[in-house]
Image (tube, rainbow, N blue to C red; front, side, top):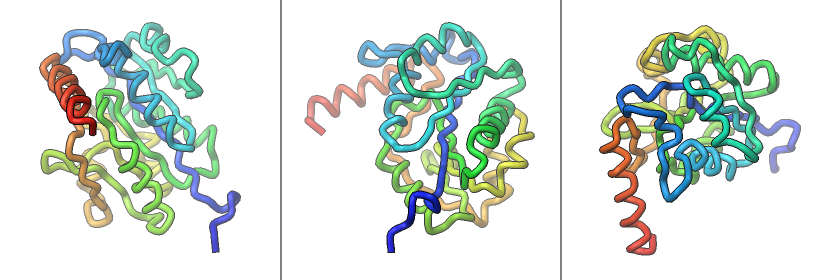
Length: 210
């Protein structure tokens, strides 16, 4: 029997884009990839999934939000972004709770992961429909991290989260129910060198036609 629309899980996406980009040395959300700001590229990819997207902005908010012009996303401007990624995550989860009271989970993504695999995210969402209590995380470089899907029972603690490590502490605390999805090319753009690597990988894919 197919799942009815009314009973289908609702999992909004929270896209974190509030950081100052200190390690990068500039507004990395606006770093150009194929002539397009990185944040816009990631947001467009996520919009391919049929679920709402909430973008949390903070540092350089006005400039960063311009990069989202015309996209059907919801923007949550977080004034306390300097308190760390955990605080920005909390702001996004609070917005999910306010806007989507029936949400069964939240899919947390980062604006500095321009090679995000939409197919993998769709697999995570599909897994959530049959494993509603599991935390579904991405495994890369041996660690579990974003993108990560947290079920509804994590909302209360995430809504009051803080700290620079984002949700990694919660992933470690709840390790017994974390399931990992492998991402082979999930590069975090923390430095200009990381951006060069991303551009190189994209060029290689174009050259091979993959």
